[in-house]
Length: 322
Image (cartoon, rainbow, N blue to C red; front, side, top):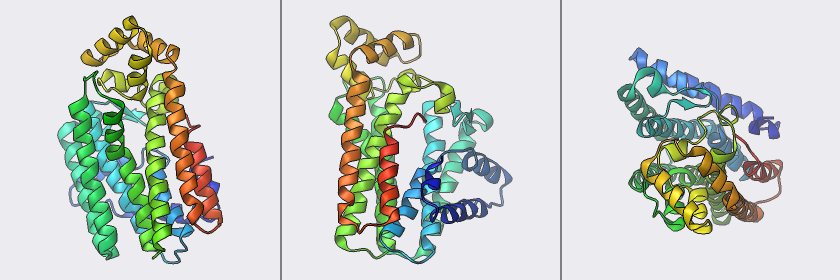
């Protein structure tokens, strides 16, 4: 079951978001449309736009602007994927060739820019300065998070605190913006807005932590991307940070060396070390703590089927394999 199918009331709204996205990919430049359609239609669960819909409904929203707001969040997310794949030199995403593998780096970056600008065109139409403030700030923080991650690449001395700062920026910030913007659109109370903001923040952290675990547990078929991508790119994610901290001196040195040089030459030994040192369980426990915090934050919201779906979505986040 796809996440949007958890709540029948959301399904038609979710389909409306998909239609809105497709209808707003138009451009006078054929390649822009071609790449835009390719990346947008290449699968994915569209968790972030779904969060906009659920947050707005949970806060009692009755209008239709949440459809365009959800599309904005997806456009921004898609733009970050296009840019990330270029930076990481990735060739597989969601089980398909990345846009940069098919068309090259320059077109991918520029179409990412197009999607960012299209998102802000739509945002102007919504006409809320509060929502614009939240989303523009989030976009800025996401960019900072990506730069910070780049600076930490091939650095085995990256601390857990530094790693958490990266994922707060590059992943959790858009989750937080999605749920907070939905609450603002619904003109919710201060308490409800803060509850939904915190829910998005903690869920986003959990989501990324599980992503990092899957790099050492799942198959390429399950993930839709290559196993060991993080290691190949020299990213010191939490499983590796904990493995260096908890492993023997020999294990620590091997992990440090693998991070420094990148590549996949040491993938199997590193995967063994990650499992032997309890790094998988440690990261999963961290993710569960974040999910618990996300669910606790929702106590400020009135009971509804949408609130229940938000809780279900959080629990699914720590059990997923893709």
